[in-house]
Length: 410
Image (tube, rainbow, N blue to C red; front, side, top):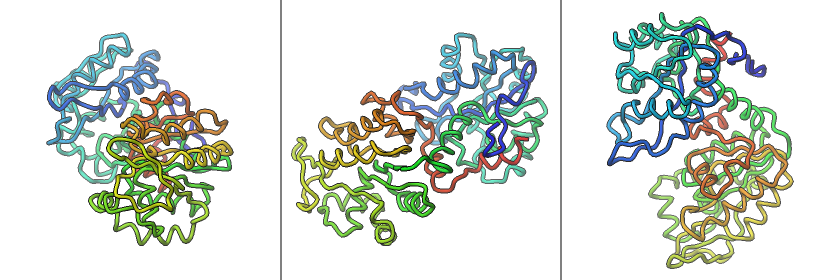
């Protein structure tokens, strides 16, 4: 039981001999040309943390998941995912190219204890992504066909928990037992630690190229006294420097303009006035001069070169702040870490987090990719599987799927 939320977990239910539907997030990178899976990280996480436990406890496990979006190159069958899961579990895993038709229902009915069945990509059914309430989704063809065969519904897809899709929220109102899986449980326990009751000082590190949620996060974590300081890097820092009145140079302004971030400037100006002492902007920056790293002080702006990292002095300042922290949350790298010479700031922040005694959490696709590339993925307290879900939770303190668990996991 996750006491703070009143949500049951796998510890609170007996699954032996029962048919368990587990909603996971197997959504993985796909090679657009070959349609082959490029990475099995999410399959591995759910497989080893939740599905393996269900197998060992004698459940008849039915896996439901999505892959890609209709019309996109990564919108493929889950047949490869089932094979990957079998390799990870070291056992045969069944797959059926059906979601809730007769073929799927027959395969579910024939399952024996400790067997695993993966259903076809749930987004191949049009109704999956329809916007509706859990109770409305409970009347969908998907739920009406599968729910009578299911004893326990395990929600494990934290990375998709910000969506109100049928397979995520529709089974909870009608399946007798509803619980959080191990991935969901770990995520929620970690998020409670960084948002609801963080040990102080609490530092948030915001970077990367997705700055659209910057104002909402600043308002949420500083406005509610969750964070003591926000450290900034990447396009987030460029946008805030520009909002603070610095001329960052036309090439860098153009990047912000193209991404539609300049419309955020008026609001960010107000937030900088209100929380300026708590929002730490870079004091120096690294620019790309014909492929080489060159550092300039903020006072030397504007620049006609692209800003691609925080500078060394800023990296040291940030490391000092992190060193004194007891909770650190990082979403977004400090610069273009993929390019040699511009990983310096990101590496310095990771190194400070790794050496810190704080509870450290990282999330978001690029942050995780940077941590993996630079060798820090296993040196933080918690790696969140969610990108959009993590951001929405940090802003709102809840998610649609969490609300469903709170209501129906009883």
